[in-house]
Length: 268
Image (cartoon, rainbow, N blue to C red; front, side, top):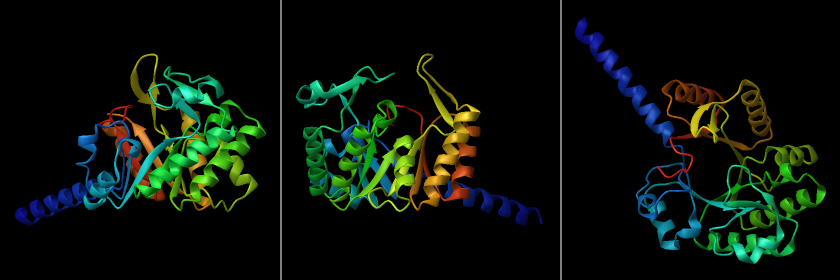
C-alpha cells in the first residue's frame, strides 16, 4: 500500500512539473538577451526577440530550434538614443520618457516616421519573422489627440499589410479606443500587458507587487481584449514563488499565455 501511495505521489509531482515546464515554454520574451544566447533558445510556442539585430539565417535557426512562432520587438511610439537612426528623427521627438532617460516619445503622425517604421516591418518580414511585438503605443496615452491616434493607426495598418501577427505591448488607452470604434479590429491580433501582478519600483530599484487598483484595471482590460477575439499575453517581473503561482493560475484559467522574468532588461 505504501509503495502504491509513493508511486502515486511521484507521478503527481512529475505530471505537475511537466505541466509547468510546458506552460513556461508557451511564451518567452528575450529582447535584451545576447545574440549567442538567443540562438540557443528552443521549444517556445511564441518567442519574442529583437530581430533587428538578427539575420534571416538566425531566424531560420530559431525556427529549426522548434520555436513555433518568432516575433520581433519593434518600437513604434518612441525612439532610443542608442539606435543608429536616432539623429535622423530627433527633431520630431515629443517629450522625455519617464524612468527611461535614453528614450523619447516620438510624433507618430509624421509621414517620415510612418514610412521608416513601415520599412522596418518590410525588413523583418524578409527575415521570415512571424509577427511583431509592438512597443510604446502608449504614445497615445501621453499625447492624447486625434493626430497621434490616427498616426498610430496608420503605422499599425501598414505593418499588418505584411501579413504578420501584430501584438501590442501596453497601449491600453489606444487599444480600448480602437475597439470602441471597431469591435472587429483586423490589424491587431493580440495584446501583451506588463505588470498585472508585479510592479517595477524604479526609485527603490526593486520588484514588488502591483497595487490592487492597477491590477483590477489591467485584469479588466485583458478580459475586454479576450472578448474581442484578441490573444492575451502577460509579461511579469518577479522572483516571488507565491506571485508566480498566482500568475500561472490566473492565466491558465483564462487561456492567456505568460512569461515571468527576473530581469526588467529581459536578458535572462
